[in-house]
Image (cartoon, rainbow, N blue to C red):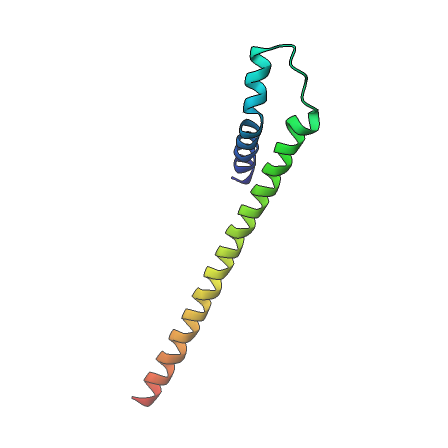
Length: 87
């Protein structure tokens, strides 16, 4: 899933950052070439960084849900234990 997300994000950044250049190049073949670093490497770097940030947030969310579940189970056990002992 991460590789699909990386591919999709990179493709999206490539299209967004290069759509005007590609249109201009198609209309005028003599239009100057865009450097490789701006054409490919910059959208690739943005796609990688965005994918890593999103995946880290997903991991933090799952970690927080696990902690919440453990705390809820602990509190349920504590109140169940004390409620049963007082009855």
